[in-house]
Every structure is written in C-alpha cells, then in structure tokens.
Length: 162
Image 1 (cartoon, rainbow, N blue to C red):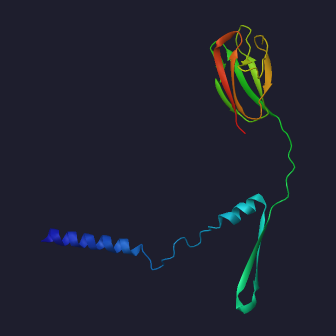
Image 2: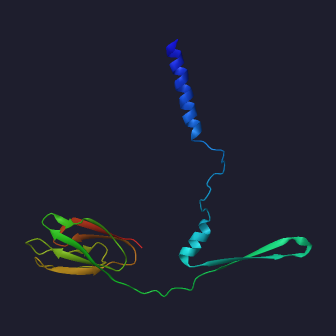
Image 3: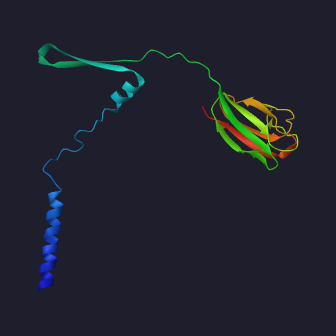
C-alpha cells in the first residue's frame, strides 16, 4: 500500500510543478517585433509614412507612402592579396573562390620554371622563374579552369562569385 501512496504523491507533485510553470496569460509572442518589412526598410534607408483621414460617412481611410533612399554612387575597387602557389605537387590551393576584380598572384614555389594558363585563353602568365610571380585579375563572374603550361596534367579552378 505504501508503494501506491508514493506513486500517487509523486504524480501529484509532478503535476503541481508542471502547472506552476503555466500562467493564465494566453498571448503568444508578446513583445516580439514581427514588422519585418519596416525593419528591412530601415536597414535600406527607405521610409514609410502612413496618414489617416476621415472620409465622408465616418469611415477612416489610410494612405501609405514609401520613399526609397537616394541612389548610392558606385565605385570600382580592386581586391588584392590572393595567392596561388605553384610547386612540385601542383597548384595550392587547387580550387579558389574569389570576388570579381580580385588580383590573383601565381607564385612559383618550385625549383623549376612554371606557368599558369587559362583553359579557354582567359590568361597566360608566361614562364614564371623559381621564386617569381605573375598576376591575373579575376573577371566579373564565372569559372576559370587553368593548368600549368609546363605540366598540362596539373590543373586548378578559380570560381568568381559576384
């Protein structure tokens, strides 16, 4: 009999703890800002104005006007500093993702002259002496496959993401 009493007391205690966490406040999401369009407009600099006016017959009409921000001036920038090393094992890294306009430096880290050549003629570094380098500026977008002109089986890929 005492085991049954313990189980009943345990269930009653668990139920009271569970119900203590509940409240009679049934509003969901109270205090949560769900006006995402307004937040987006604020981030982009647009403004929204809502005006109300009483129409004939006691009806209320609302007019909303959204004003876009002034266009920003655009400038062309060159991104420098990306390097691909050509060594005895190949290109390092083999696959690269860069932004348009990135200046890519091919550096010869091998003891033999090496080169880099775009598969469809996008670029050709010519012979790069050991320790020397050559540069190539990434196009607007696309994928550029290339190989080592001295070892055509050594390949690499540059993906230009806009």
